[in-house]
Image 1 (cartoon, each protein chain N blue to C red):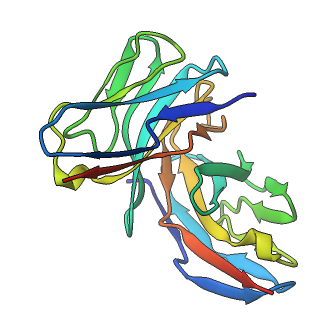
Image 2 (cartoon, rainbow over the protein chains, first blue to last red; image 1 turned 30 degrees about the vertical axis):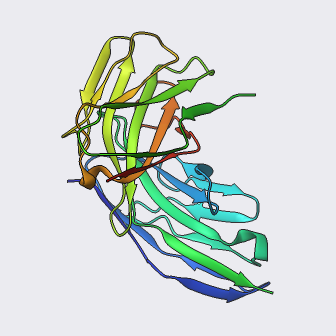
Image 3 (tube, each protein chain N blue to C red; image 1 turned 90 degrees about the horizontal axis):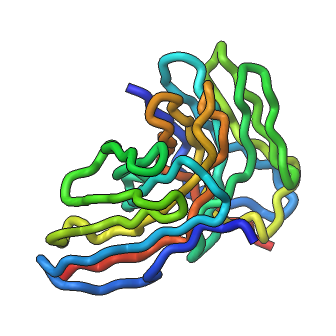
Length: 112
Length: 116
């Protein structure tokens, strides 16, 4: 069945460090891919998405490229801030059922 | 403001006492869904609805019911709650998923449920 695997962390970085959170997926067909972010005590917010191979999603300095050949959608940011501390979820969306299949989340802590 | 709202935000109840968690969206979305979030398991879909009067089971539907009588509302019903339903619940909505599932799902703030 469809699945998403992401590095589980926790990840602790210093401010201005480079961030990579790995995400790979298994799916039939070509699903759309998403990164959501969950700040403490809040719901999930869309961070970025890509809907077809080689698409690059970007938002707030974060980027991820849909790589069909490696079935990956790694999240990157060149210089993290304390305010980026949150849990990050990689997900794919099934066309048929319409639901999101989530990875287990990666908790990021950024220290000043 | 476009949003998904849920009520209540926090709920403590006892085993077997029926409860309903409401969900409402103001974006005229066709698709609505319920997820539960558990430590180590991530988020899993409970039920979903493609449109009014059309609902179907997700990956973990046991012990839950839903209804979709109006486009904007999608309540989650626990007829006889049990302790293993203690969890954080999220409602989400979107336009119809699209040919490649490209439409974004928007999430409510969550309902934290404790069943004693």
